[in-house]
Length: 128
Image 1 (cartoon, rainbow, N blue to C red):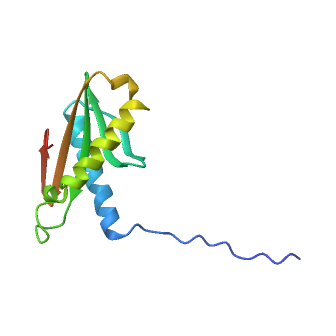
Image 2 (image 1 turned 45 degrees about the vertical axis):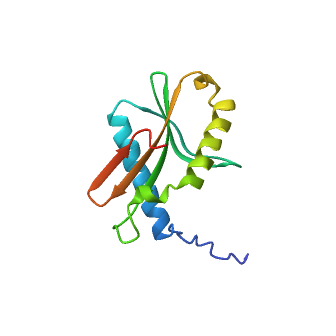
């Protein structure tokens, strides 16, 4: 008789801050969908950075950074999108528009920040 080792798979759960971020991104996604936007990409990555959500409505493409916090203890979520992060998002957006997003290259684009706190979602259109 062959000796079979039990192959129990460990259920891995995301770190609490990652789970919170994913929850916030899903919430922002629903918000945009309810406003008539189509989700083009989620968590799109390139060497220049990551874009949480890329959305489209007509000829408008929105590059959205989502920040979720449990409280204001460490400041408002939107404050976490500083100049350096904005620069990385712009560079990543340009890479996306030259590659997978070529079809939107001539359309309008906007950079939004969605700040989420318990019971509150704030979309800052054209944040930078």
